[in-house]
Image (cartoon, rainbow, N blue to C red; front, side, top):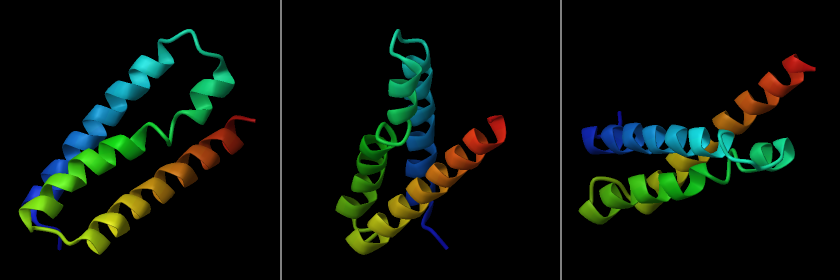
Length: 87
């Protein structure tokens, strides 16, 4: 079970990431660049969100890396599956 501080941090990171995706989607970048920026735009949000619980002591570094890695892999797989279905 994750501490409440971690769940709240992940929630805010997801909101920030969705906002970033909206900004990327509205930009004049090519479709290829937009697709390439989907996952890398998540990493700064994950670092910012999970850094606070690590500094606070609510989560150790290996736990934060595990959570961020699991969410990144899940996002990557969901993007790949959605791109496969759209073809």
